[in-house]
Length: 153
Image 1 (cartoon, rainbow, N blue to C red):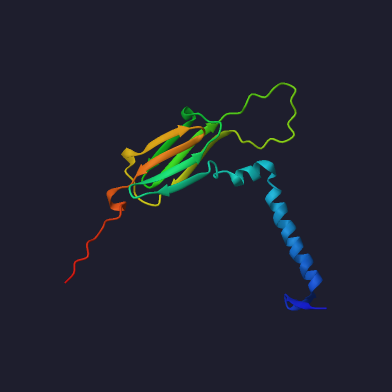
Image 2: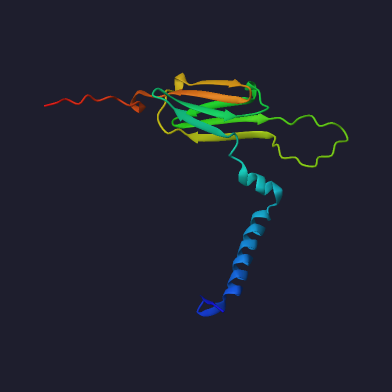
């Protein structure tokens, strides 16, 4: 039987595996100790899902916001931080309906993203169509690449 050192003494490997399993279970228990509301709080901040891309002149942010309408959204920019805020309202439930699973969140959300470069805040445009928010952020002059001519001597 193999042995591993443990606090100045040796434990058989099978006891070491039990100790690892106990530590793992304790971690799971601590994560669940706050109840389902605590678990949900731990996962807030990842909505909406976004992609950020760029071309030579602009950054483009797209965010998936199914079920929302444009007047439920607020987009703001301060310095290099873009903030998306909104409210997801609940569907009106029919009477005498029992849920077997309810995973779609409702309520307010806020997500702030640090932009990778400086943009012209006064020229930012936001469009919302079919549940997808598209924000065009023109790059500031200092963020654009400049071509430098190499001179032969």
